[in-house]
Length: 439
Image (cartoon, rainbow, N blue to C red; front, side):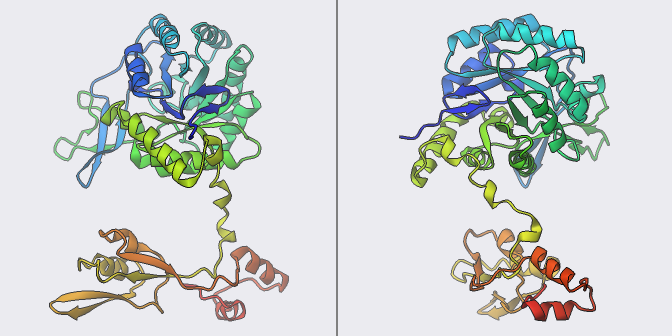
C-alpha cells in the first residue's frame, strides 16, 4: 500500500497537497469544498491589517496559445474581518479534524499585536501558523510582507515574538525577492521556527498594452509591480527550495510552493526536500478537482518505483546537486536524429546553425532536406533536442566510455601545484596533458 500521509514541521495531513494562502482559501465555503475533493490541507488566506482591494488585480501571461503560463496579482491579504475569518477557521477545523489547517498571518511590527493575533489563531484549533514574510506588493509598502522577509534581522525578531507565545507549529513563508535565500531562512531557524514555506510570489510587471500604453493589470489607467506565480516560476522555486534543503544551518522541514500544477511537479519538489506542497494558480485556473489527478498520479508513480511513503522519496535527489566545478569534463554526448521520426521541419538545423555550434547539415534527399549531425563537431549542448517538436526524434547519446573522470576543480588544483595559471597561451598544453577537448 502507498501511504501519502505527511508531517511538515509537526503539521500532519492525509496527503502532501495543501492549498496555498491565496484566493482559493478565502472562505470556509471554499476550503470545505476543497477538502471534499481530497485536498490534504489548506493555508488560510492571510489575515491581519484592514485592507481595500482594487479592480483589476490580476494579469495573465499567455504564451504560444497557452493561457496563464504565469499569473501576476496586486491583490492584498484578506479583506474580510479577522473575527469572521477566525470563526470560519474554527468551524472548518471542527468539520474536518483530519485535515491540516494553517492560519497565515501578517500584522504590523509590534510585539503585542503579534502576540494577540497568534493567541486568537491558536484558539480556533488550527494545526499551525504561517508567517507571511513574502508578499511583494501593497503590504510591503506598509513595512510588512517582503519588507520583513528581505531583512533577516526583522525576520528573526518577529518570528521570536511568535514562537515565544505559540503552542503550535510555526512556518515562515519566505520571499524569493532576495539575493540569498539562506539568510532569512537561517534567521527563521534561529528564532525557533518549525519549518519554512517557499517561495512566495516574484516581483514583476506582467506587461504593457501596446494600444493604450497602460501597465497590465490597469487600475483606472495606472499599474505597478505585483506578485508573479504560476507554472513559469517553478524552476526558480525548485532552485530556492534546494538551496534551503541543503543548508545544514537551516535543517528545517519545507513546504514547497511555486508553479506546482500536477503530480509530477509535486514529486519534483518532494525529491528536492519538501514535506508538503502548496498549490494556488493551478486551482485558480482549473478548480479544486485537479487534486484527484494529483493523488492518483503520485500514488501510481510511487507504486511503479517501489516507494511506500513520502519519507521514501523526500530529498532523494538532493545528492545529485553539486558545484559546477565538480562536473565531469570527460562526459561526452552527441545528438542523434531518428530519421524515421523526423518531419523535416529543419528546426534543429536552424537552432544549431544560428544559436549553437553549426554541426547539423542539410542534405537534399527526394525533394526534402535530411538533417545529419556531424558527430565529431557536436559539442553535446542538446539545443537541437529541445527545439525538436517530435518526441524522441533527437536523442543525446553518451559516447564516452565512463572509464575516467576529471573535474575543473581537480585540474585547477594540479595547475596550481605547478604554479602555472590557465591562460589562452597554454590552453593547448592543458588540453593535451589532461586529454580534454574544451568546446
